[in-house]
Image 1 (cartoon, helix red, strand yellow):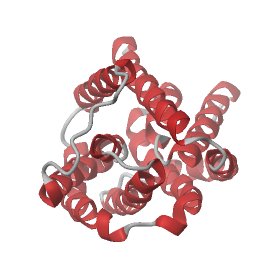
Image 2 (cartoon, rainbow, N blue to C red):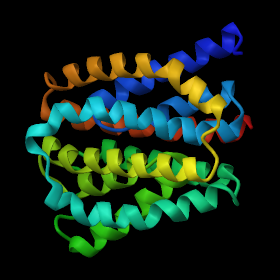
Image 3 (tube, one colour):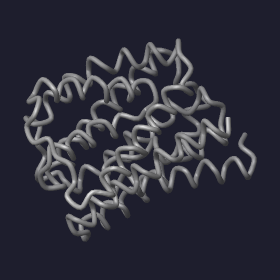
Image 4 (tube, rainbow, N blue to C red):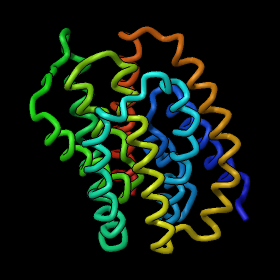
Length: 248
């Protein structure tokens, strides 16, 4: 049973994470972890994030379903399939603290750099599909390890450039597939316990409703404003991960 304070933290995290994912196409784990690591035992959080992310992604993909680019996403997805089991295995062997801190520092540095530039840095087609696959491996690993599959592919696609809806049409299906597979892997590994399922059942209605609201708002936002908001979300997410490490 959850006491009132714990329940409030869990549901607030679910609401904010659902809205963020519906709007931006990523962020369930980055946002929710700031609340769930405070409220719940640490081993429960990664599998809960993976399950919650799948629910939020199912709603968010509706916003870009007409421009899905499975061909462009294929190298990322193949790399993600390779990276997922590596992350799931590492989850049972390694402390998450160091990696969460490293991801936080990277997100903070990247978002700060891009926000300060008048003309944001781009790499175009550098690295081609091979680099896409390697980024997919990294995203799959982080998805299996922390439920954080989204930031690395999203940053890579931002660096490559192009319209935001086309970028999202690649990284959102990537997130959906990788996190669904990560959830399956965590289930096989015995990490999705009955307690995780109970908390996920409490969060699911909140996540679905807030994801739908976020997806509706996304449709009315301009290209430039969306890119800026995404960078701000990455900045805040990095700050949360670092704060979690500092606060213990």
